[in-house]
Image (cartoon, rainbow, N blue to C red; front, side, top):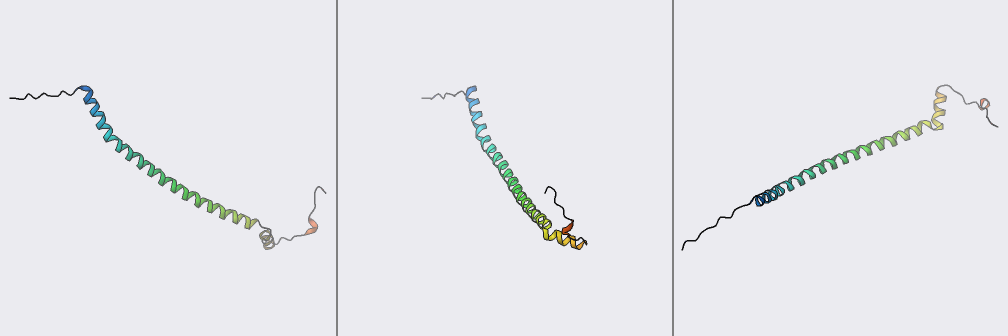
Length: 97
């Protein structure tokens, strides 16, 4: 008895379906890898910017302290005396009294 083998025909729809499945199976990990790489890059940039912000805040705080120090009454009196200026209470006039 000879057995006949029947050849299964692959239809266009089946070819298209197999092709799409293979493309999805290959592209899904690649796109996931791409998005994770971008996320990692952006996280690194965010951390760098946070460090810069903290650095600038510290610099601003230092400058505010320096302004307060220079604007203090004692410092103004010290600079005035060094320049030869004298505080004379008789020269002060009040306006609006």
